[in-house]
Image (cartoon, rainbow, N blue to C red):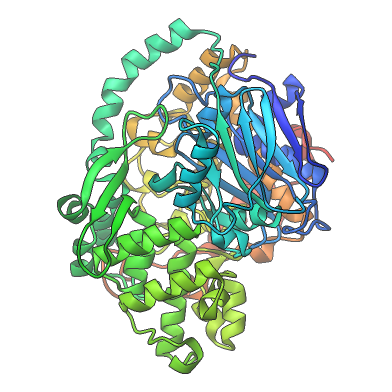
Length: 611
């Protein structure tokens, strides 16, 4: 098949070896690429006995078959690993330019295991793979590392690296690419996994191209499709994801005061997309091959939070470091975002952790003498100080940097009720009380709370997918039909993560038929749309099987009591509570899982997942 180079680099850091291997075409067809192919490799090589921070864990950095083609939004790649936060499935997806550069260098992915004796980085220049000493950059932040390693290799190289947080094995650390633009594979503790291997960075430069089976047909498709796509994604171009703040606050979807409140109108306006565009945005930036350009270069030149220059805060950061901590100072949030990027921290985890600590402080579970700070709501100075501590692994910040579950245990009894997570992974900035399907999606997401594993709330708000049997948006406050909706969209999103294409493309009109057709155009594969869709179902179920193998099950398919039982009494979703107890049994049945949430032998046989 075209699209694939069918060259995967298998790296053993313990032995200091790198070997190029191919995979069977049947495996590529079954698991597509990206997170799907990574799932197959991880399942086969690791299990309950594998220490997530040990040398036997894999770190799979995978592109997809359409990465590096003319299709918009295909600059992404996926990281797959056993998560130190959940002890099970770990996955993080990132945009930027690194994935495309890896394909240009001639590889579909890198599978890394082992642990170097001393810090190293990989330098990949087309067919040349070198293990280089990283002693000079160990300890540097991600922006500094990007600059230093480009000087040491090639100014046009793309650097994927960890910051001090990953080096210190902070369980909320991510992997960062594209320098000060701060594109991030953030979730599930992936930065700690890379840090545990003493791998500072993977630096790539390539000069090749991606073979396309039907280039003329693909060109014709894109010529017809892109004008309408550009029009539909105009909001993202104008404001980036920050443009979601006002609408999400109005519908009750925005996290406020550690998920306690349902309305924060004045505060949201101060940190919204329009406010950012007016006060600090310099220009858009684009991931590889993207025509939208939702990224924002921002600049803060004066005041207490200067200087700030580089990638601006995205919606999730504004929601969790902003709304959830009641910080309504946009310059302070921009500074906090830059610090997280430099240290290599997941802003979703950071915002939730600080909000939990602020509530614990308010309730008397934490004192100023314990923390060394006054953790009052909206205290910008305290937020900045805690991020420095998290990044450096010092003070109370070192406790928060181990994730919500361990931090709540360290704070003491009562704090567990303030920790907003599922399976140990902090909730992203979308409230299930505003869109009922989010509750089911969070609870059943393989990697813990994740709005992107289903992206179902978009189909309760505005989108439809007739080619998947979703003819119109569903009413957001009902549980009726949500199990079917979430299942279909989880399978669909598994394809996105395996093809490695941006999920924001759904706002531009990309549906199953279009995606499947583009896959055939690029690869030449004689697969029907339903066969391609079945690959998404296979991939999702393999992730579930991995979690079961690692000891997770029905008891872990849940959400915090606050989300399920505490109505907020204000805002756009004042009284709604998601009925997860009603949705889960229907979901299991429609999935073909048993009453304990395990895929049945018949389903595994039908999906060719027999063990």
